[in-house]
Image (cartoon, rainbow, N blue to C red; front, side, top):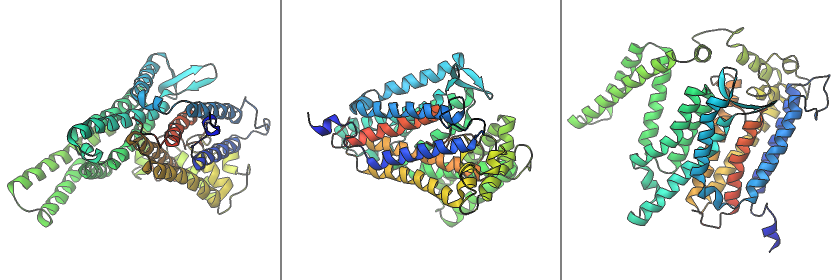
Length: 434
């Protein structure tokens, strides 16, 4: 056996692994700063969060090495199996799990908590890659169509969406984890990369815009705006014909459906979720109540200036002005203590990792590997954009972690599995994996 065959890192992309390690270590140091206690200054103290995070990091290292030891074909062969098992576990947590902060989405083993919803992301990614690549084989053998042609087939697009929608509804409706459920929207990027009709994206963008407009104004006003936009488009850009008029009428009916659905969804949200949306849209001002988190986060980030106050010197952090500053709002610790330079560095590292995954995805010889790689990039990008966005007031507070950085074993392990499966697939890119 050759030396390379004995090396589990043979073919593995060094830049991804190095960036991963740097982010995890920096995250650990920032968790220490976020919950720093002068009575427990030992960073290895397992009675504190930073000590516990080191245990999670050790477990993540074992997981990463284990993934690299397993043959890459294992992930393609058992993609649906992973999806089914993780989905089943997410159902069982409703019966066997413990309620934490109003959501029954955790398994508790003594002081250890595991949130299975986090692991649903890599399971969905595997199943989606398997479905798209397998369907491509069948179609290409029978009709000689490319994968891009396949995704333009609306029926297959709907099937692909089912893999995303089922766990999203389960997590949002029954586990009450809206933030983790919304993450599955990121997989739309994968479908678009593989050739999904741009009509889906245009409709989705218009629906999202109308959704926001309806939250700001009344139903009637939203419908009038939609009617004005559709009418203007008909006059300026669309030829007058019976067929086009019918299409425009259907678009207006769909717009009315979006408006009614918006109000239905809004009225069925939890009170704290409504408050977060109202504060983001500036329909409500509550700096000492529901808007306290974001206000304190922006103060912390802004107070850091260009170079920051220095490690362990953040007053907003030290005196616990920012709630959840070691998890959802970990970025405010970076902004206060490391300043603009440190914040930019963390953003650069996260974006570099995402762009590196996209670059490697494009060189894959396997449809499965390419699709899976884009899924990894999409999930990471969504988490980074939303997490940082909510700390600076550009996104609603929906409670999702900063990848490889925030405190928490479930998220760290889930992101590690998500990323290192791709590292393994890329290491075997010279093989045609099916």
